Length: 270
Image 1 (cartoon, rainbow, N blue to C red):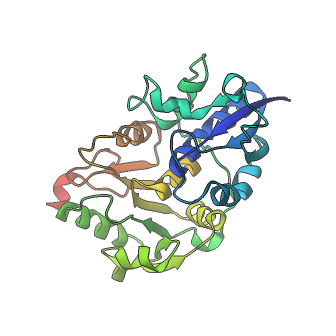
Image 2 (cartoon, rainbow, N blue to C red):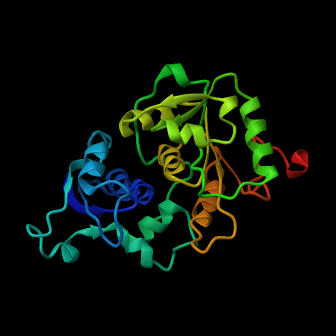
């Protein structure tokens, strides 16, 4: 199988979405990828080395990955001419106009291929223990919260007997405004954290790293999107919602999808 070199970079959610390129190249183009992680145009919230180490067991276990390493720009001084840089999406004409997967592929491949509906980017094991569970993660402070937001969260939580707030540390749980309704599930390692998300019946969260994880794993998910922000990443998720039958979306004012699986019509919450 022919090899290609692919560069991925910050931030974590963007990096996870960018892995659609090596996945698609493997499945549809018979190409396997050497994947290089680098801090280009931005930095990771943790160090580059730590991010690499956390991602290593996840990325290396994917069939599309031939190797995964930190980009050594001294070893590859002309990498920009010969490697595929997924970070090009930041200047793409498709930015804020397509799904995440379509944005990445259109920015990197001249053929501009069509991503299949309900496409799964990453494959990970599942834990049977969580197959009926609701997993929640909401990053406090990044989203405004309305009475409507609270009603939506409470209603979805009420639909489950097993419900967890999955997080890396105690503070994230303490900051959750409905922590008394759910159990904390502390998982410090990214690999185990993503396996837990991959194992649940439904993931509920706002527009942050864990929702990106749920998206690339293509688990059943309900997403709380940003409302009236300058950077419109919410539009990529909204377009994803139109292509995935297992995605429902809302913001602090309204229901954004019309599937009536876990979210009810807007008037129900009035």
